[in-house]
Image (cartoon, rainbow, N blue to C red; front, side, top):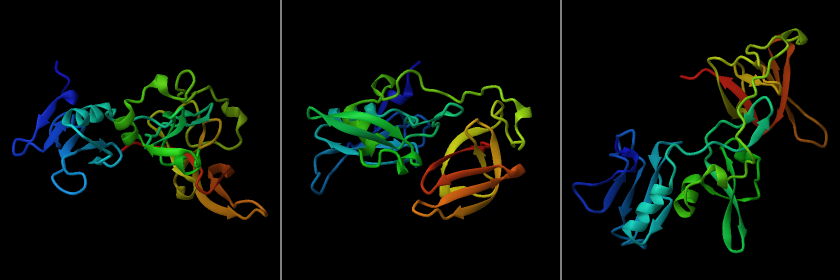
Length: 247
């Protein structure tokens, strides 16, 4: 069977736009290339992959020929990649989709670094060179597991057996039974009552209220007061693991 995500289609009304993976309304659609007819980029081809975050097309680079533009768009991985930040043994690597990639320069060549979701990007490697995942792949080729900084296999939640009798505070969701829930990340300041915050051992407690505790000579601590007297602390702009029920 033909892989429709790799099929190119030309606009039947103009020769200045071509679509990859189907028409814009098709689930196989991956983006388009557009020939610029005016301005400083006149004559060049804009490479516009579909952003899985916004479900919109974004121009990430320009190519001199239609062949170069096609290759650049074909480099972009459909659906994107996951964040590569390791959270904890109980949680494994961050499960959210990456929007940025860090990189460094070695012998005049850009070398890929860590894939970051928007939440982890607020605090992780803030001084590193960064670019969108779409722009990186269009200019440097597809990101593969072998090219990444993760050593070994990507780690999923451990789901280790939890000795329930050891806990004075009973969680809403035990760390060895997340059935029906999905894991995600939220910024500390976006956490509020009703959120299920995942503690280090994987148990999830429901936030009932939030206090901001002033600490001399340090940044303020955000304290989440959860069910059964459990508390969780974090700091502004830090990523907090949460469980949620998928829509």
